[in-house]
Length: 218
Image (cartoon, rainbow, N blue to C red):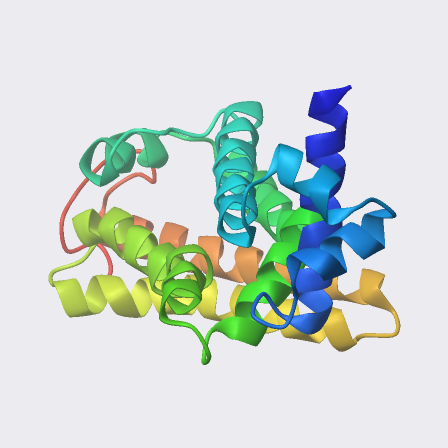
């Protein structure tokens, strides 16, 4: 089926991009990897850029499905804050762990992360994707969420960095670990400590974890 072939092309191309880089992979390389002619490849995708665009589209779809599966809010930052504060702690913890598994264990997402890591210094468009998916995007979004709990934008960003920084570092720890299953407990401990800090700050301020109040966290 054509749909299955297009999916195989995306997976094979992304695996090559993760190994050799997007810039270092040609359409000929992709066709060779799949055991098909360039002509057959061009029947499905007219260019390497079209393949990359389809990969990004697939990543966005996966993000949507994962958020839906974990019943996480998908509204804009202001609306998300209200929903986030009323989301059970266990759900937040589970979703955080799922995010890590997504970027490390899922072959498609993991290869996407590795491709962007390789190319972030060589191509401006891929550098922007790197920031959107793995750097300023996640931290900026978390800062927007935490802004309702802090007295300033700077404090919100610090809290976002405190939450996301160790997770980002653990992606690389996971890649280099011989015992990859040893990394998940480190992430879980980090998330638990972070949640405990938030809950403690809420208690000290006299606000329950499910209520919104500015200047909860200093």
